[in-house]
Image (cartoon, rainbow, N blue to C red; front, side, top):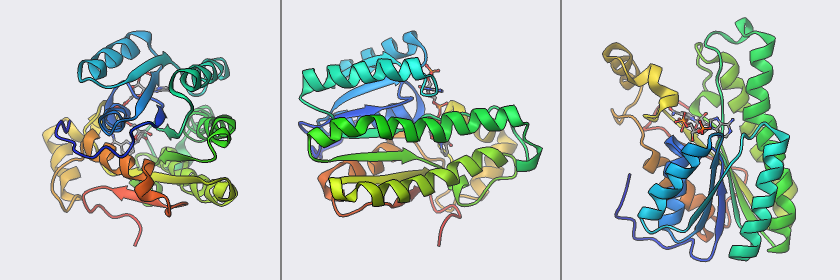
Length: 261
Ligand code: NAP
């Protein structure tokens, strides 16, 4: 993680980051906090939330946490209570980062079982749409806000091993465009991050064995895996006023891997 961040672009802002007790989400939460934001972190397990809150507080960051499985309506209601709490404590909500995803199956898209397909789309796409929809009243009270969805390079170039997951990530590119157009009049910018291969638990299969590592690195011109702080840096830019004239875009942070033109 990058501990030498000098920018303070998010002082006075409050950010909600889903799936943020580990991996990319934690890297994003840390960077937003380092830039001065109050950060609300969340994930499914209380012990992970407690550990991440402690870790970020130990770095002097302003952070609160709550459990939230993004695909459970009752958990999202809890998040809504937290939106209210964040509003009362920090004076409003300015930034939503929808980062949670699942991939319960490996294989080509049409080999995917219907139940796995439903789960992938429920967590990766439907929960992102619902979280964005549910945060709008809070943004409207502040006359604006930023939404950032976390997609993947797989959304541009479907991986054969991650067929259905890749399609769900393509859907987020479309959600970004459509919501950006709808919300432009409300001064809400909607953008997206497409990570390449980032060394987290999620990407274990691609990064843990020597054979898999060298095959994966072969596809990365910069010849290294991404880090959560690489992702945090791009998201902090999109969440800041420096990106006020950018909406409906996806930033690919993938070390030069094949993606869009
Ligand atoms: P990760 O390391 O596996 O992170 C998992 C985090 O998500 C943990 O905090 C976990 O905590 C939480 N989580 C898992 N399922 C959740 C759910 N249903 N609701 C709420 N929280 C949940 O994953 P990652 O690699 O950081 O991936 C983050 C995002 O980046 C995903 O959208 C993924 O598709 C995308 N991405 C990753 C890569 C990569 O190479 N790593 C590449 C492209 C895109 P709990 O267990 O406590 O819930």
